[in-house]
Amino acid sequence: MASVCFYFQVHQPYRIKKYKFFNIGQDHNYFNDASDTSLNNARILDRVSIKSYLPTNAILLELLKKHPEFKLSFSLSGVFLDQIEKGFPEVLASFQRLVKTGRVEILSETYYHSLAFLYSKTEFKAQVLKHRRKVKKLFNVVPQVFRNTELIYNNDVAKMAEEMGFKGIITEGVDRILDWQSPNFLYSPQGTKKIKLLLKNYKLSDDIAFRFSEKSWSEHPLTSEKFSHWVTSHNGNGEVINLFMDYETFGEHQWEHTGIFDFLRSLPGEVLKHGQNDFVTPSEAVDRYPVRAELNIENFISWADEERDLSAWRSNPIQEDALNKIYSMEESVLRTKDSKIIEDWRKLQTSDHFYYMCIKWFADGDVHKYFNPYESPYDAFIAFMNVLQDLELRVENILRGSIAVNPILNNAKQII
Image (cartoon, rainbow, N blue to C red; front, top):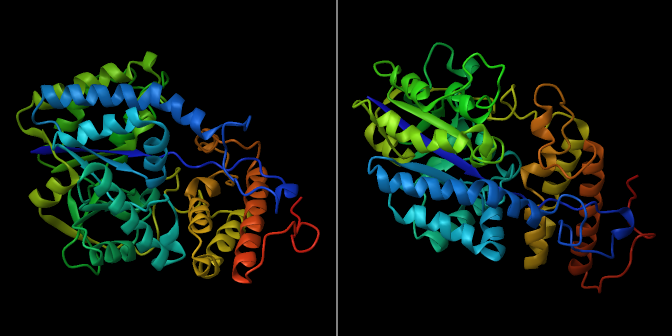
């Protein structure tokens, strides 16, 4: 049997506006708002909702009604949920309708789509627990399977996920890790007792997410019949085919005119034509299939870029500087007990901010520029560090019990 496990990542960050040096001490609103002329958070979310989220959710609801065997899962970042809860209630309602079918699983992740595990286990746990509470509030379910930001993973991530009560964890099926082994089985992370590891089949996932509309691809056009045949061919040498991708694949990365919606509409029916195929959620895969081997993954992996490592966020000095600075503020920020300061600090941890500072512009360049409001990685760094200086001054003012003043010429270290 070949079980298909669909997982879609849904995330939109609070992008930082082009925050200038002379804003420091004057402007505590760090994120793109309606008055900003650059890529605006609300405008982007409205566009993606119209092109992707709403039509795709409608199609999936139709498919769930048509095919009782069809199932799927989402990971919805906390910052995405905050934005749709506040300004896009119809989008939230469309996701809630899917979950109410009982065949759509919600996964756990860090609330702020952050790299917290790499820098602070305490902050990491706090964000995961906050995300769990948010999912329970909005969908009345408690996540059982965990996915770290950008599928960042090693043995230690699995150990902590197990300690926090998760029964499954998902990551990338990286060739250099698997060697001769297949991503189409469940594995046991080294050093754990019960938690099971699901691996993305990146070749089949990327056929949809990246190659679907590539006319130079030898398999173009990709039809649901062809793809279901590829899935079925794994019968006998695989148990679960994990198809993990960004949800914006449907309608945004692959526009409607490419035929991506028609492909999605017909895919479940084509897969189910073969009696040995079915669909499972990640939790069902964990419950149904046994562990076939232990995997030892000591170095961090991810699903980002060709390298599938941490280089998308930590490959140059400005990224390292920004990351070290934001996490060095943890103790002082939390000591303020100021909810607005803590919330701003956590929004600034979102991985996208550091992705925009990446200078890898080879095959992955177009990906790094997607919805990027900055003209260069250095522009992203300048805005981020200026914001951190303002945040640091707010923290200092509270901790010493003073009223905020304009400190630009006194204490601020100018970034030019």
